[in-house]
Length: 159
Image: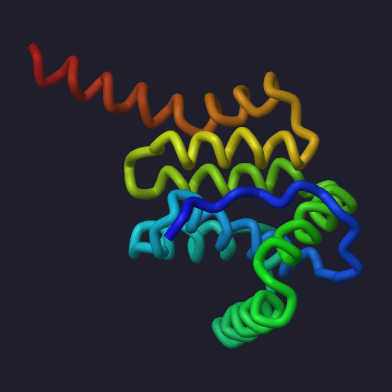
């Protein structure tokens, strides 16, 4: 399967609720490497969605219904149209950083970020209207504590 690319603009008439928009970006991010979604990505996506305030009142059934709604939209409109409108909805709702954080956690969930996923993240933050500086700050905030913990453990093992 070829790696996923973000759509290049256009004028979609598709309306997507914010909950669907965030979930669509998360799912699309899981496929950014061109591979099918794996257990780590699925787990990261599920955990991240459950932690977002937008889904605070969601039950398991609500998440299943959301998944079904997203699948129906993708089947009817195509993945690119859904993601294009999801990006627009996220921007309108001022959820750009939430979407980027979700995407980052999903693509990094398997412990590596190959070039295809890095390119996807670059395209995503640009499409969301997030500056490179802010995107780098978000990445540092997300992953620096983890890296520092790993370094501390390595130093302790060396002693």
